[in-house]
Length: 270
Image (cartoon, rainbow, N blue to C red):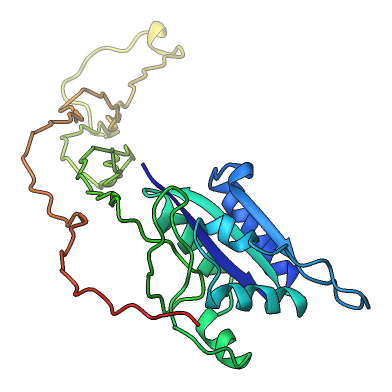
């Protein structure tokens, strides 16, 4: 698959550092990333600019309008980050570079008073020079040999989990209820009566002795006793039923829109 060279200009070293760091985190090979810095802030002598034909060798084409933008940016202390990426990774690399607020090449060219086309010159390393129009800041190469766009699609996976819906608790406690019952009781009473004797019974000396007669009174009283027995049982039982539930959600998938564009008119270089 044809490689492409993607270029971005950053006005601060911090932006360039962050871009390179994110590229490395995305597993872009270190030898595919090149960084070209201008003079450091506060220094009197600028860093040497790339030699003549450097940009052409990097992009695989002839020097043109954007080369002057890169050179002027380096002279003013900017940093140029160039990444060699395969066609399938070009979009990812471009997105990472644009995340760190690179310079808009067309606006920078206008600010420098450079005339020419408003297109970038980044080209596939192994392909013939082509021109791609971009409004973003990173210059992305196009390829006449084609490329690929990965299309992703989500799939719905439905699982199960247990959810606590509440607890049933049975607590035993004591309730006292007043009760009453009638019972028949017997009371005894001793009565003493004195009455006149009848008849004429003879009295002897033996009758003049002491004599005691006793009688005991007996009363009945209620005696309370209690007995307990099991009248019922409370049983906890858990029943399980199966149900079928329809889960509805949305899944995403990527599609492509194919649009055939007319060829752009070529611009002659002077």
